Image (cartoon, rainbow, N blue to C red; front, side):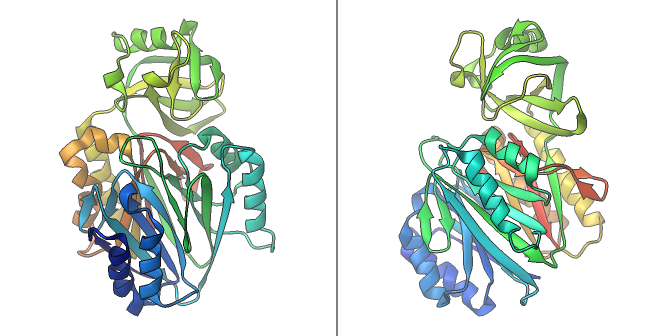
Length: 380
């Protein structure tokens, strides 16, 4: 596998696409990951990219984000690309579903069946969805029937939660979900950063519906949080407080759910970015910038120490992390560029939810939906 990456902040989207395409053309990419701020998410960006590539067989996949990442660092506006070329050793397949706010589970099950319909199982997948899709439905399908690692997340805008866009070859779409599947010889590793400081003793989810939590441990959700942290939940806690979620039957499949006070529909309830099943155990966690940064550096150092030959890195990092880190968000990229050789091809985006399995020895857990999480895919 070979890879290159690049970024641009040329104001005109068509010219930005041309600049990126001209950079990639000599590389003859098989796949191009394209990430952009929401302002660049127009057909002209893709038109410019394809016009400069002058090829019809390149797969383009990606999305808008609350900012983007590239080897040069993070940016609030612009576009970035990560291009891959396996010299034909990997077969790539792009699948998509539209209308993700209706019958999502059924549509996803059919999509995943198509990926294995020819008797060949993907070794790796990249999934991106419109953030208005039900994250719990996506996680359930991934958990139940997908037996290969999937990384990705939810497309985003500039933290307004109004609109987002996905890239699927020559189209810019919304209200959709896109999966890129890789078949063949792909060596990779996935690392997840979601170790936040737990507060209190925790409790059991007793009443919940969708993304709303009503009762925990015999208390209303808000009273439970107040018991754990010693104060009422405020709007300013959005992006700072979250639940660490544990399946009582699978202890090592931990994920985070961001607490969103203004999502609550009933008095005493708490809204989340993704649902939690009744019976699961939760602990309140409090995000601290220094902890988020330290964990990213620990991940980068551990991956570098493994001695595996790094070809490229893909980063999906929660927009809540970006909001909390502020000016220190450059560490989401800086940890990698410091640990690995200069110029490592890297790209990614700031997301409204993340998807990845957790590492379990030499294998991986089920694919899970996360909040306030840093997902790193390393291609070797």
